[in-house]
Amino acid sequence: MPLRGGRGTLAACEPRGGRLGRILVTGSHGLVGRELVAALEAQGHEVVPFDRRHDGSDLRDVESVARALQGCEGVFHLAAVSRVAWGEEDSALCHAINVDGTAVLLRAALDRSEAPWVVFASSREVYGNPPEVPVREDMPRAPVNAYGRSKRDGELLFEEAMAKGLRAALVRLSNVYGTEHDHPSRAVPSLLWRAMQDEDLLLTGSDVFFDFVHVEDCVKGLLRAAQALREGRSLPPLHLVTGVPTSLLELAQAAVRVTGSGSRIVVQPARSFDVEGFCGNPAQAEAVLGFRPRIGLEEGLGRLRDRLAARGRGPDAFSLSELT
Image (cartoon, rainbow, N blue to C red; front, side, top):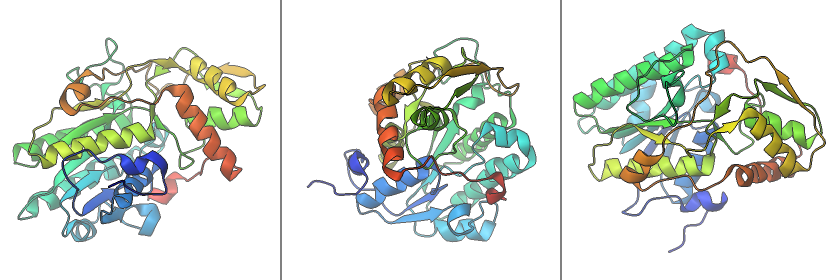
């Protein structure tokens, strides 16, 4: 029977093999969280949203987390201070939410008589500046900024919990983009929206390269990881990546093409806390989950262009203070 939903193909993202039960989604109102919740709800699942910007939910509050977990079969743990720049601005808050909050969630999960499965959204930032690309999941974790260190520490907490019997998946994301619910200063929404306005495209280093993944593909990968956990499978750390490196200059040029823009491209010095570049190896996720992103960069930029054009304004902005 076809799945119905108002969010396009995201409504058809569920892997084969059965429906998910009641699900807690931390970070439910973020870029990935909103699309994941929409996909789950379109399939008829009961979703428990947990997000500071939704109802003031605080991942550091033991009672709130325990209450949210009641009756949940599984958890997608997306909540975080999720911007590298914010981690540098307030490293204490970054650690409190990303590490201490994760510890609260894991303790609550392990305290349950039947612990839920948990999919943890980690980050490419755990690698820092990797010695070679494409990066494999078994390469050293050597983060170079506060956000990356917090995600590494979160992974270590998960590894401890998994040793105690928790069914969990560590999924490392890379430069997810694709909706208006994104911070306007991030590379993709910033460059695309400015191109749509024929404004200068400002690059912090032109040769820095990343692995850009459309949010629809990201959600599919998260759901496949959850399905594998439901089937009782043990999963190694996994990348949800394309395996295609794209420099910031190439990204800006693509934004100009898909918008027909007359924007100039202006290169500025790179920031001291940014990594030099990242491109992940997608082979392990493809072998283990049968997953590989399918949406190419220009197709993804075109979809985002259409979403922004339909609303008539740029991406939504929110501040670090909203997470405190």
